[in-house]
Length: 297
Image (cartoon, rainbow, N blue to C red; front, side):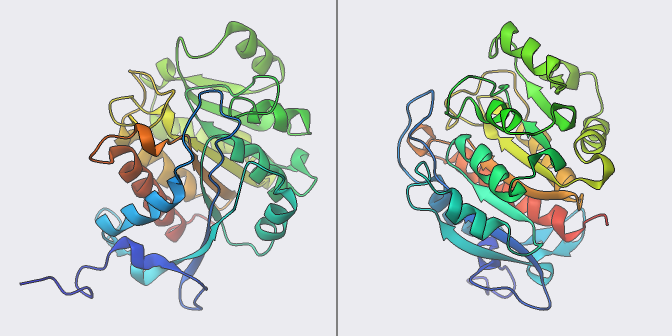
């Protein structure tokens, strides 16, 4: 007997074109940046694939005993066309409207600079940033390797930036020293092995969200171990587990200071046949929705 959709609703049913008064609204935007990537990658749209992967999951959250279908609606604003080009005006018009939290699907990390500066609307100094990333993203220029530098150069206060999960042999001494000099809090992967993850995230939120400031969260999926994210070109062996990243995303999303979360650095053409990277990204989106459904005021 085939299961009835009302008894096993797919997570894809959370996507809608408009909000509902009886649901918590979350906004979704796809932005497949790839043209300036340090590591060449394909134009195949990650946001399209992640949306499709949602159909493989349900809406029920065991440990919260909640059904997201009864709690949230994800208002899908579609995908930006040519997200690598000059889309700042389009982004600002979208992102600064309303108070609902945003989830952004990349693309590479170039979207982090574009989206955060659009949300801040000229007031980056009032914001905080948390990244979960194997890399510092402090390179010069404009690429997926430079968004943190670009944001700092444009006014983001490094004393309210926390970078978690930095990998050995994936960064340079020069950029690490510069990030620290500019006030950035760096928590490498090695420190996470001997620390309580929830405690680290709590401290990160206190730093980035000090004085009640809004927080942008960048989830660079290559912070994970390469075995679980083969679709992330720069992932290395020894990164976070898929479960650790899922826990982190839900924890961060619960905090009302978090105004936006992006999920980046997935190249479909590098993923395995079982789509493990894309499926993890879909789960991360659902973890964020579950966190938002139980937000701490």
